[in-house]
Image (cartoon, rainbow, N blue to C red; front, top):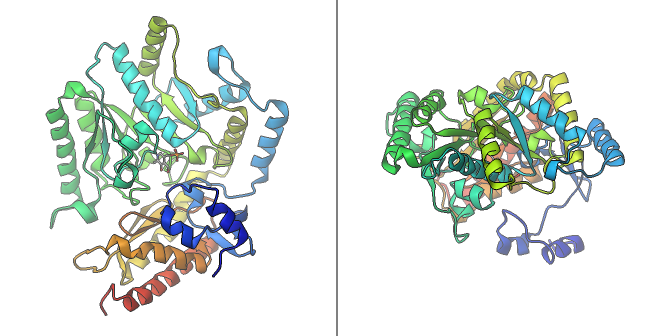
Length: 461
Ligand SMILES: Cc1ncc(COP(=O)(O)O)c(C=O)c1O
């Protein structure tokens, strides 16, 4: 089909994130015109269920009048205010108070950023700064995990453990080390139970810390459920064991709640669901339900004391963004948090989880699906060429990309991730009927993908 004029304008003007830029010149964009609730609509009026909540973020869906009103009122009152050099405004103060109150970790202060990447970069910088203040300048290395996703700015891209975020970008920077990924399906030894696998991974983390020297290891960062790395749900005992290892070597624990925070896993925060007891959390995405950008980092008292010492010594705390604590973002976040509390959102997700996970688990019967996995309202299917041997397709065959395209044709948006994983992360407000429509579309798309793969001789039988 010839590309529309709008598609051609797009191709000639935009560099698209996370896109095969060469292939995109042929296929062009799917241009979304408007959104309402869990639905997106293209220029021809075709409706799509937003099965990925945008990019794991539009928890309350589109067109929420309360959020629109909160943003509008704030723009009328104070459209910009900053927190530099002692300035402040009520929205930032109130939001920090609220986050302190609901945070799952003891929190002294809150630092605002604009994106998940900035939040995790901030975590790295604060860790380094703290250890300088504490007189341990060698304790600077940060441990992340293979397949982790923590963003794309220079420190965050270094924490991320995915090749396509690092190859030819000259990251990771020095001092970032990666430990094993807790994906039992892919990385367990033959016959190894989930419990034994978790035990081994905690041992591998400890071995890494001892090899590098505990006096050089400053922090460990982890997502409760790994998102962009493939929706990887750790074994139940993994995080308690990892927490013990980190405590033993005085390692500062950072929980990246950018996807899992605010109810996604059926608990207020993801760390509570998986038994991780960090010192600090990074927040973004559902904090404003993505109506406007906002992110935050919680600061425990020991960290705050270190910041105080350093700023006394240096003369200022030299970190911050123009839009840190933007008043419009703060007003929207306050309204979002009010809605989550009023609607008991984490409980509501826990109520929807059994149906979501049952529909997901049923896809494991499909000939193309090697594993169906998930927790709360996040899930994925991993497509394989051979179920018995778990053999993957050749990445160049683009099997998951094809399934995503068929799903779009069937009226739902899902996303493909590396290793032919298709992820689902619908808005938290999705109804049972909408969930069924989402899974029906994906199931039909998988059937169409199987027919296509047979025609292409990618699968036998
Ligand atoms: C767990 C996690 N951390 C950090 C980020 C980076 O957030 P941003 O894209 O807002 O920089 C993401 C984005 O998807 C994420 O999933």
